[in-house]
Length: 319
Length: 279
Image (tube, rainbow over all chains, first blue to last red):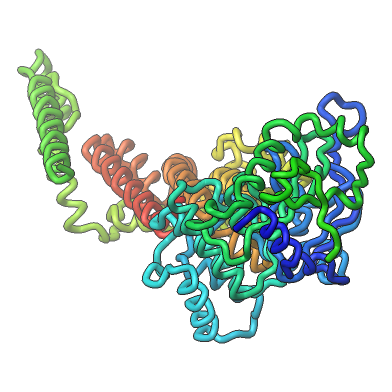
């Protein structure tokens, strides 16, 4: 496949239009979070002026260093934390608290250790549908435990499960309440590389079949490239901002085993590494120098073609 | 390996027991010296002590006395001569009544204190001042207001059991992992369901620890309380045996008090195992 052809393929890919649909599932408008500063005078802004959308059925990853407020941002999306400024609209309703429509997969599985695997899922299902009979709840839970390949481990307590299995229960619990959006806070960061890889693939399969809208926080570039349709790059905190939004130019049929053979893989990966290693620190200069608009951060589509032209900021011309 | 450890520990325990009983026996035997120079009539009146020995019984005497108590624990020959089973039953009933009343009040209040930082700070000065007060100091006040010695002992047990349960419940509830509460919040769980399904099971091991401390203290205090108020109970029994100068009876009751205290703790320990969870 030549570089030129790949550019052509990239241009005509349909999922790029998903983000320009008129009613996105999640709309983040000017979100900011400030804490009283340790020095006592004024507030420290963790992040500010954060604007982005997540379309229905889209998988969006947010990448940034520790300390840029990633988890705080996700907690605000979940309704567990309040923003200091800005508006958050999910499914045309302003978020004012937690909701069963927004399921969360926590970084450290957050399973209740006194309940069995199926008990943890049932706790969620009973909260979602309080009127359901015991049998119906159990059948529903079983379906989702089967989905994450935990058949046979239903009655085990979390302490008897491996790290990967615990997070599988966490994922089953989140999917079992059939949420409109799924929020994931570095769900695989505590797992070893092999377990992480297989869980990523399972998540990819599940999300593709259920067309789940997902917003996920990660600091793993390959994870983001495999799973995400778009990747939001956040600069270092305090005063973190969205630097730019990367559209994934890898084909949607990508898998973990063949992803790295695609010619767009290294341009994308290099762009992300360059951001994490260098640009995330000195982005403040870019903001002041360029015509940076926080409401519409630059959208970048790194590909073999753009890489060849040494024009990393080439924007997608409207098809 | 575990079995051999158990066996070795058991043999060592037995060895220590035998050594202790042997030393005790020899020591008591040596006290029984030859008769001192004394008027024979007077010596007859003094009995065993006339020989220069003491009323200190040996392990065999205590064993005989224990066997007597075990074979006939529930006799009742008037207010000053009741079987040890009856006396222990009085004490256990008082301890359990006071302890359960304390649990019924301490656990809900501890729950509220643990949930709310405002309540915690508001309750703190009272708890800090009342906790170090010896429960027996409440006794005169209890006797004056309640006017019944048995109920006053129950009140003293109540007062001494309440603090460990209150403090442990508050601590257990306050230190429930944030992420479990966050899970429940994202599931829009109602407050009673949150308390019952998340906070209570999460705090249960800490609450049970508080209950174990409480029942241990209660069993310590009941002996002293019953010595004070008299009438019935194991504390009164011990004091009565002392007044009778029956050291054998005193030592037997010490052993009974120890065994019952151990059983009370074992019951709560097995209850604690039911609510324990490994993370």
